[in-house]
Image 1 (cartoon, rainbow, N blue to C red):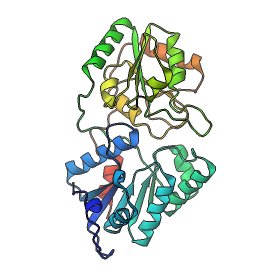
Image 2 (image 1 turned 90 degrees about the vertical axis):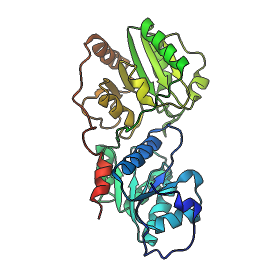
Image 3 (image 1 turned 45 degrees about the horizontal axis):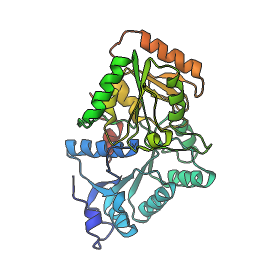
Image 4 (image 1 turned 90 degrees about the horizontal axis):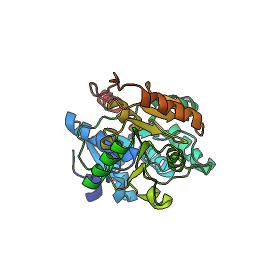
Length: 335
């Protein structure tokens, strides 16, 4: 991968002379959040295949370096949650004659009215808008006929063993004391536009409190859920520091994605790729093999968990490790 040229070098260069084929724009912090993990794995895959690209880190954002980076690239691809920044990005790409690629990592239409209008404007202006599920694809085509639907999942090339020994010991104890261990995750304490908790962790804690023989591991790298909920019951365990979620999945019997809104959940793909059964809410279309439940229908959730807990473990045929991820193949096909 090229150096962080755009942050450290802002000398003038005619925009017709494109230095890089592709500029990736995003953040590479600690492994928390589906979008940042997506960007991290994306750059790892590009390094692996020797693709010509550079990276602009939004943690060091300033408008001059941002514009310089876009000007120097033939294609630029942004990964961010800010509708306003996506609009600025697409306008700069038009000005500098750079082809813009925008991935909408969440479901379209989940923001307030004003933010949704900004999101739709950037979708309309982008050369290659990318959405992650069928509902967003249908909606997106109203604004841009070039919209593409792609799976967001990029398999990890390297999985660090980053669970602390205290956590590993606690999980081992939980597994010994429980007949069935479920995991769930949350990027942070988030509220949706309807003032509902996005990841429904509070609801799951209440649900599993009523089933003391079942264990629940909550992956929350931000630590905010544990701080908010206080002392957890004996059968519920928080992992409340930055870590790689795959390591939690591999120590669990089932993964529950109980969200009020979603994109193409990275965690669901990781679970299926590691032969872990998945239960998820029906708020967006889900990958094949996912067991679908309705949010707040606890009888339906209970039955799904019972069905999984009582059946023998089976190997899933689902795997994406044998082919290039969608976005990598897309880059290879760019002219």
